[in-house]
Image (tube, rainbow, N blue to C red):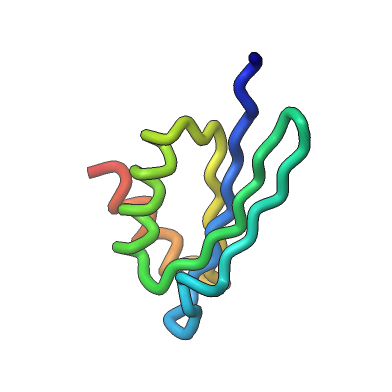
Length: 77
């Protein structure tokens, strides 16, 4: 059986309930996860976990260039 491609979109805001605010969309070939995180540090940890689980693409959106820069700094160290 061929494994599915896995993609994730992380949305960052301090007010998200990360256990409740989550969605998964699946087809026969693709899994897409919509994940919420509360901070750049949490986004870095989640990105590392997703990479270990075989996610091929991970996108992060926070509405703030400064927050995204903090995330990028965290994954490159």
